[in-house]
Length: 136
Image (cartoon, rainbow, N blue to C red; front, side, top):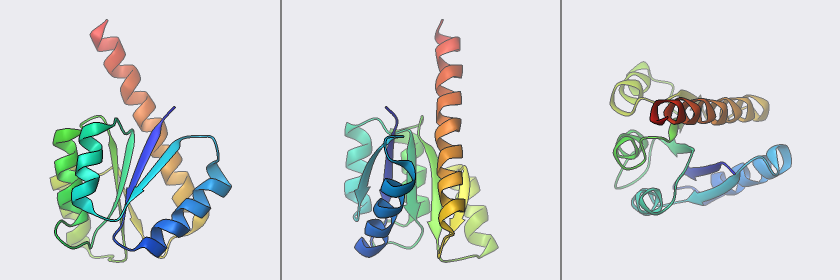
């Protein structure tokens, strides 16, 4: 089963996302959440995740920094950035430094967020299939 990690320093945001995904996507993937980006990196080293979603503005390590490090420790993970910022510079940095798949804004539209997460899961499955073909 696919595994998703969502990282946001706001526990209320994580609770809201858990409720939404439980309601809309129950049984499609396993979901882990983390409020601390440093702890999230540790999780990425210990478990295989197919998708990582990170908030942009977090203490210690911002979402772009976390996702850039995720490229190194979990290169198979498809990365999404969730942010209240709509600045072009933030989006550009996320694309160039962390190779993000999608840039999602807060507040989010439930259907749009779920659609993007499903697209990321499909991309992870596609990449897995490509790697399996290369290994054969």
